Amino acid sequence: MSKNPLTLQFLRLNIFNGNNYNDWLRNLRIVLDFENQTHVLDRSLPRALLEESTHEERLTSKKWHEDNRKVRSIVLGSMTNDIQKQYDRHDDVQSIMLCMSQIYAVLVRHIRYAATKAFFGTKMIEGSSVQEHGLICYPLWRSLRTSRPILKKRRTLT
Image (tube, rainbow, N blue to C red; front, top):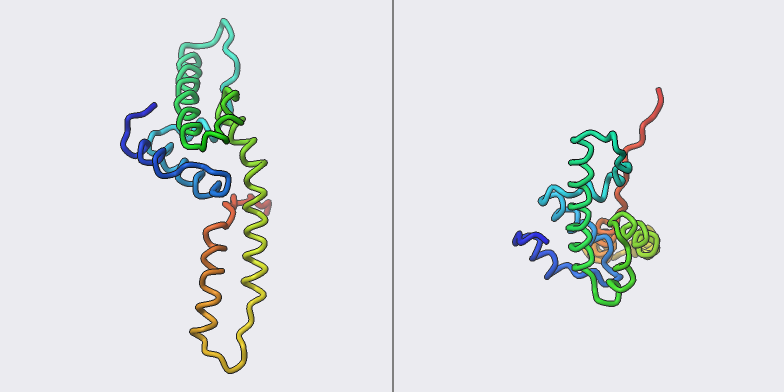
């Protein structure tokens, strides 16, 4: 595991508890980007090495496995003990992240839906001030802003 102060600070302050998936994932990506290890989350495991594999392919595979081990330690180290026990048998980070997104991203979707419904359901009461209405809408807007999904750009055929 890295002895980098940013990584250690992340582990100390951003414990995944089941309710903070988006914030935890965003902070995890920041730390891994700093450590130059986001490729473990974004790219799949290199293909199996064959006898005729080149030296470069062997080095790439070795680096990926080392980084996977480090990132797995960071991910598991930033969870509560109960959640750690659910994922400590996974060998690679991608399988951990896939399982977590299937379980915890659904919760975020429901939170986002409820916040959207409340935000668009607010109506200004006739005769009330705009400031009062803004004080009601602002927290809803903030919750929508913090729970927004990461949208990937779609390619369009023209």
